[in-house]
Image 1 (cartoon, rainbow, N blue to C red):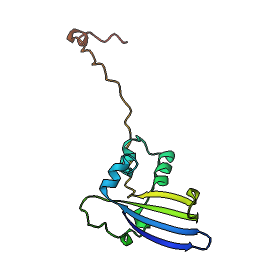
Image 2: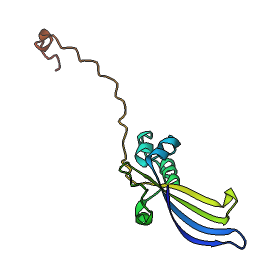
Image 3: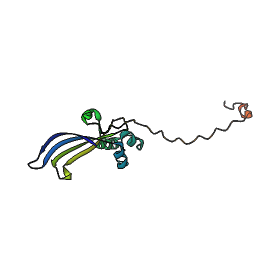
Image 4: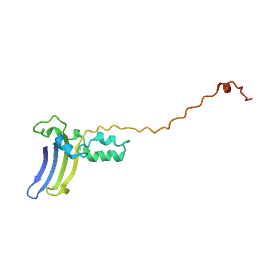
Length: 142
């Protein structure tokens, strides 16, 4: 894991106001299972229509890389060719308290492809053919 940390840490009262950008190796992401492999595209694949609730969920779990300075996160040593996973943590409060962690988000591109679900159309019964003699009957309308 590699980290880039900005902010202030007050050692006298153990308070901190930090933003941590981090990078995890592919091995660690695999150990985390579904949580480590979370991405916008995977979340979208489970949701047929993107609505307010699902986009709120995605916003709560991820942050857009264009808003973050991910180029400052050091590369993993030794440098890996496998995909890495970046994250952002915001800490505000006493360092030793879990409640000081204000947010944890995966850094993920917002490639939200809206899919529309086509309504299922029941199969049409084939129209029976009209026998030829019926077509030759005279029109009885006057």
